[in-house]
View 1 (spheres, rainbow, N blue to C red):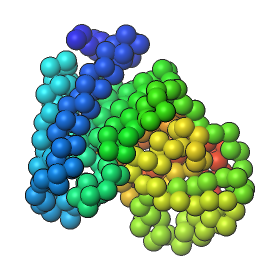
View 2 (cartoon, rainbow, N blue to C red; view 1 turned 30 degrees about the vertical axis):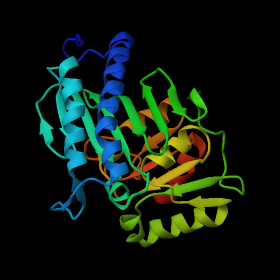
View 3 (tube, helix red, strand yellow; view 1 turned 90 degrees about the vertical axis):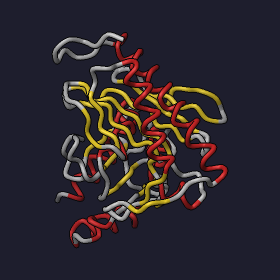
Length: 273
């Protein structure tokens, strides 16, 4: 498959082909992951950062790369298990099993995350959660889509504009936020004002946000591989996605604030007031 030359922005036809390749790569990962999970057939090793890794993680990352390399042999890769490989304007970001702890403990809150970054900008994402029963995807300027038990459809965020009894917030890891008295107090104020506070975590609260079921997601401890496809998904669904400081999402991102434009702006002001 041809790649745009130089740093020219990829056109819709290229992105459509890249999305098709990413979907095939997610299918390949699913073929590895699902039988392992259902049989609980894997050993677990603890990595240097104290997180678990299994044979399924490594095998799924290899399967994803085989598909993507066949389509784009000149592209670079950054995988959760094998790190950075290659260089260039096009970089595939891969987390073969985001939520390995869930995978190991036998509940279906895990997913495969595949995204394409071009010249530092995320332009495509596929978020596949086969045992939960959802797959979401988006490309820049192409809308956001979800396939679940109800079928395949385009999705949009909610219209929430205020932290009130109708609003819902979901959080992921908050250790760093909790270590900041000012930000913890700001978070507590939001909790007091909204109707629901949940902790769906990982892929799920971004899927829910993109389809209008919750209104804001807050996480203070993550890395780009956890969220790369979900950034594209939320933005294409009409939401706003930055880090907690309001900075654009990049390879160095360590936190996330995503929501309806109105709630994102208000939360950003609260956390940085």
